[in-house]
Image 1 (tube, rainbow, N blue to C red):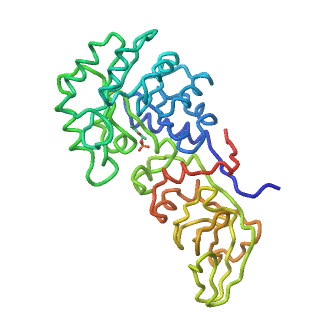
Image 2 (cartoon, protein in one colour):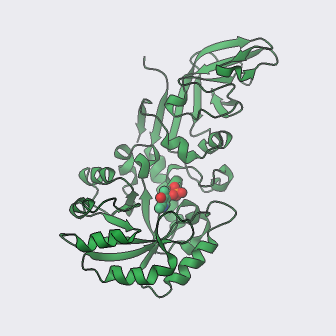
Image 3 (cartoon, rainbow, N blue to C red):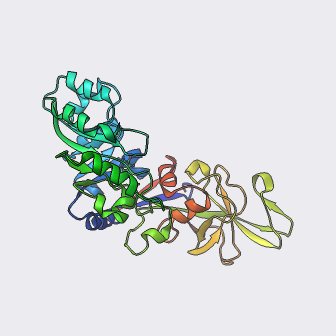
Length: 357
Ligand SMILES: *Cc1c(COP(=O)(O)O)cnc(C)c1O
């Protein structure tokens, strides 16, 4: 018997979520964001579940090439652009659309020998201050790009820093609108949060990531409750030992949890080497035999410990849902001081994955 931990990736949930996104996106086309190995779900195994998308957006040239070699013929967008001029040989060969965020990239495209013009996404910095040309230069840069024979279609792109929180996308959006008022180009601005909250930002293309995988961009389950998204990834394990603590006895490294009365503790085959967040404190939600309970004590490399008080029938072999259909990943992330995105991306290689059609 293998160690009883496994992840399940539900492709029908992925297809379903794409249709929900399609509904919210209105007339806009969809770049399904599959960077970071499809947010930890495994790009090679899941991309066909998103085959109804209009394009795939990612960062890594190797992932883009893999998609082409597995038969995806539609658009592919490189969200960080290319990293050196030589990359253009591959962008040209595999017909990849690239983000352009710096002068040197336009110079490199101008100087390259291409078989056909490349479509580009001009990245405008409207306040995130990571990648992009200052919005004030939008018109100048656009003119320059349009003048290059190696450049095909030009789309304007920007990224919101606060679409998922109370600050909102409005300030950045106004800046982009002003700066691009006279530019007759397609536009692509909205991430998951803006797809759900800011329909005025949708324009021609949207870029959903986290909602495709069935989790919340804000980390608040309440924010996506009611729109019908389904979690794509479930992480399941089992109780492999039971301990009966007496009052005053502690559990795990650092003895960070001490029982105040007699208490049954379940030991679960799941630890930080499986991708569970090591900093999750006592009290992080987890389900045993379908019943909501909580972790107690430190998370170890290969094990974690849970309170069995709410589920006295639990024993060795009892099923544990770490996150998934009944236990929202967002609630686990919130308790651990992180976001669902990080937990998905951190799913470790050693966890066997079952694909559900
Ligand atoms: C990751 C990313 C997205 C998707 O963000 P979500 O919050 O997961 O929807 C969109 N655009 C860019 C540029 C990104 O890097």
